[in-house]
Amino acid sequence: MVVHPATRRVLLRWHDLMRAWLHVGGHASPGETSPFAVALREAREETSLPDLEPWPDPSAPLLVDAVVVPVPEARGMPAHEHCDLRYLLSTRRPEAARAEKPSARIRWLTLAEAVEAVGEDNLQITLARVAGPLSQRVP
Image (cartoon, rainbow, N blue to C red):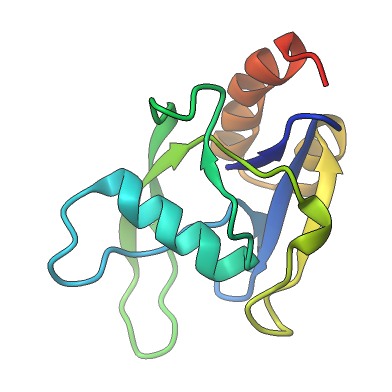
């Protein structure tokens, strides 16, 4: 989950396959063994934000949620499940965010707007967990 602490906003990405606004993320590539490194790489690829780092402590990645989610059949793949490991990442330059492709739109939203935009109960729970650290930070 990418946040901009100074404005207390989160970044959501439109996922065509799931037809929903979700957090950024993706799959590990062969040979990758660090879940956090995968999350950071995927977030950088999907947002073009070069300054992403763990938040609130840059030296200690914060895993805010671990969720098994269903993925529907699509693009020749059968229906299956993913295990999402959701880390908290921050940027100081939200204006630099760029979608990796036109169909993968991205949006900065307040937590309340994000909760309204997402359809998944499990993502609403993640956003509630993000609210704690965001509310305690001084811009």
